[in-house]
Amino acid sequence: MKTVCASLLLALFLFAATACGSTYQVKTVDGTVYTTTERPEYDKKSKTYSFENEEGMSVTIKREDLKVIEEVK
Image: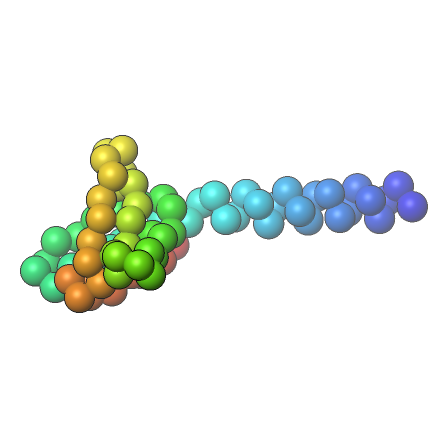
């Protein structure tokens, strides 16, 4: 029983650690590229994506100005 619990705890830790390592590139139609460690959040009401860039600044982009969001490994 202890082995099963320890294995589950280890698997949970490894899953959480891999999620923290994700990096995203947000590319706009005008050619601007932003890098962020969090997945941009979409606001349905304002139709914008918001995230914090690698320099710690808050960025908001209109949906029509967004070209692609790519996860970089």
